[in-house]
Length: 269
Image (tube, rainbow, N blue to C red; front, top):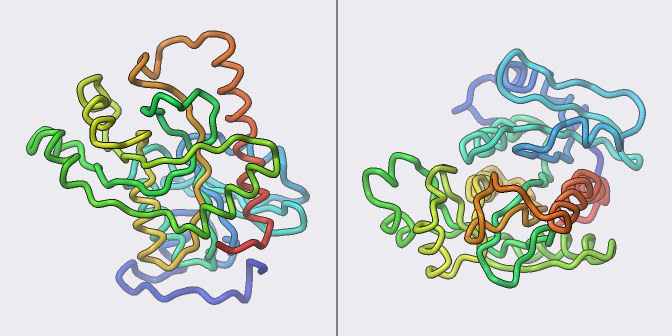
């Protein structure tokens, strides 16, 4: 599968003229975005850029999303830094539907809630529950949001492609359900314990929007997430012991290369 000029671009009239929308949000023409895309809410673009080859086409509009398109292992890949939060990621995929993008990998992190999870583990979400909405926690109450949260499955074929890549590189992969929360401030001990009682193995801030948008816009998803913290044991901002810090660094450094390898592999979910 190849990306670039000549690839069909979907017509999304509700978003406006594709050329103008894409120029505004990505700073480029639609065909400067590849069929193979990696999106990340927080990993710096430089961590991906160090692995690519040859010339780089910058995606640098005054506002919205930063990124680039370049070659990796002979394939043309686009990387986009979305910023943290479900609407940032969901909007990004909606805008990508105006380009040749077809296969999109998400690269991020989860907070582990299940006792068997350790910092640095690779986590394979089987589903992501939609707990988005800061105002809903204040208006409806967090427990009500949790009990009513719809769940978005990760397609088994998509999970399998990622799992095969991770296991081929010697990584241990844990599996479970994740809850997408719309507020870091909402990740207080009582709310986190409620999520664990409800059967969730991890918590994070984007995946329900990523999966919903990918399904709605006909994009093929892949999810690369590692365990960055254990919020039931200590807050995200608490210092880590040396062993845990080393495991976190290893996963953080491996994530960009693994996502680029998936994007360039040609293995469709």
